[in-house]
Amino acid sequence: MAELKIVDVIIPICMPDERTVQSVKRLLKQTYPLNRIYLIHTEKGMFPGELETLSEKIHITHIRPEQFDHGGTRHQGAMMSRAEFLIYMTQDALPVNEKLVENLMAAFEDERVGAAYARQLPAADSSSIERFTRTFNYPPKSRVKSEADLPELGIKTYFCSNACAAYRKSVYMSLGGFETRVIFNEDMIMAGRIIQSGCKIAYTADAQVIHSHHDRCFRLFKRNFDLAVSQVDHPEIFENVRSETEGLRLVKQTAGFLLKTGRPWEIVPLVLQSGFKYAGYRLGRNYRRLPKRLVMRCTMNPGYWSHGAYEKT
Image (cartoon, rainbow, N blue to C red):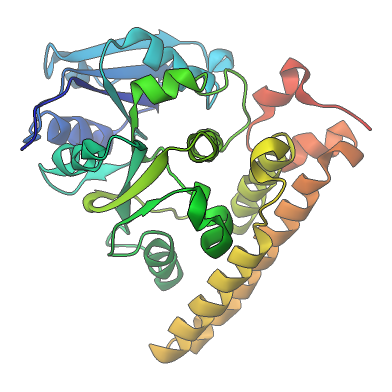
């Protein structure tokens, strides 16, 4: 193993449950030792007291719900840390084994790698559609991406997920860190900046977490609405790359997978879910033309709009 670097983990949490506790316990058992684990808790509901007593490495900060921001809260964690590398996770991402950090950090042996993200595996109770989506977005083969991959990969060049992603802090800070006011998609915005700066993004398939969704149609609608808003608000990253093509490719390949595995009836929910996702995305792309009341019904993040984010054109 190369010389050990100082690594901190930052996890925004809200109403943490036993899965969150198990995730932190697994982080404390990693073969690559962590310096500190910062938990930034949005004060909603009970806080598991067990988290406060697991280790002296755990540092807990409490914030009010209205203070939470996808980018700003994570950047707050970066400002508390003195580590050379930052690993961001979500509270529902569960390390598969004790080598998660070790495998993520191996990617940084290449000095041009500014960020590395883990493979996300589906939970045991995931649907066939969700299982295929995980494999589509997180294949078994690792890859290092650079600006040269844009013609081939398009928007996937910028793909990165803070469900579990590590950042070289010197690169992170040189690019201004996560924006302190962003609706969503702070990871891909930062990844885009890393790529555009001449650095690389590493997808490390050997670093694995269990993380999947069980979203209903309207939640998918809202998630994709916010995704589109983030792209409209950051044309410097997304203006010259399209998301629709990649989404259509996912739908086609998922349908083929369902047919091949003898589950043709599941194409019906696939079409329904895809329709909601596309509708949300198209409305989000045109959010400035919508009345604010409708925007508030479409978004997953109403707090973002209460701080002057909405502009009617």
